[in-house]
Length: 434
Image 1 (cartoon, rainbow, N blue to C red):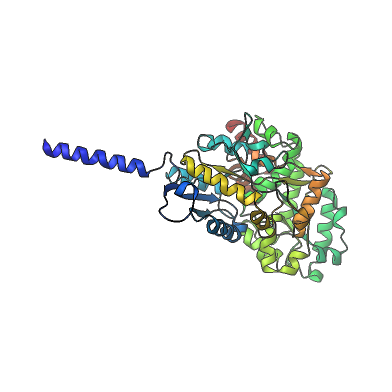
Image 2 (tube, rainbow, N blue to C red; image 1 turned 120 degrees about the vertical axis):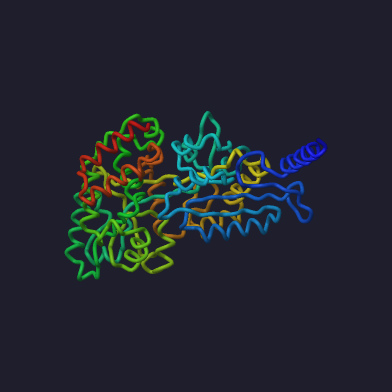
């Protein structure tokens, strides 16, 4: 009996000790007493951050190091997963493993719905107060803000200005699908003269390129360019199905082959940057990769909208939002918001956001004349003119863009199914999962 009492007392003591050291929630960050040095109320804070943007991984880690130097009581562990990996799927796996991050990314209303039980409201945030009008709509529920926008991005057809000029093509004239087809035919007929292997590099391996971006351009009109309208819709009609098919067919037919094994790196770095193709569908996020490989090509690149229904509007939106895990300790949540505020509102942070990240800021009080790369400059000009369309793919049902539409397009390219089956399968999935 005495042995039982001693074990019980030992167990009780251990429980108390573990309770004092552990988190109040399931997230990975922690708070401990700081015996030396600075820090809020003498506490040391560790934040586990899980983010999707591989294009600025090194620059972001450098910014984090700068913040840690200014705030020696804060440690931020950064893990980046994206590019060829499905960030949303890896995030779910990470959460299922019990190793939840304190800061992570969501894309919009559908992602919020999927993770709302672990997303904390963003309170007393300078960045939230500075966010541009409309950029918080996708993460505002019952007048409460749940996320902070990364930046503004746009995508379309990135083209080589020198190649277009040599071929006698004026990019401003490519406002319809017929115009684009004419330019493609011209480039295809001059491949040897222009030193091209193909007109396009269509990354068939990357379902997000056409599953998210191509589809969104041609579905946006039926949802009035509204991600919230797409999110609230029980059905999708594919009203511009024929145009979408023609657009994908054009890229596949005039692309470097085989398209289904062609990935983002090959598309952007090996083919476009090396001037082996004239055009690629990508966004301004690709600029740093192009610039690293071929600075002259990067500086001589332009971007035009994908022509849709006779109009040339640039798709511009917020790619992802930073959110804070509600399972983290209160001090970790507070420190997480402090870091995000510093990144977007401090002078040091804004300098990095503009000149190292090459972001189009989604916040006020930035000197937008410093937007450094030509792709972002053009996209910003479209935004200033209001000549944009919405990113409705962020309102798709979970699994629609890549696992359903994207996978079906791959089967279509392989000639395993017809285009009609692509559309019908995608419609059925939307209705069943909305």
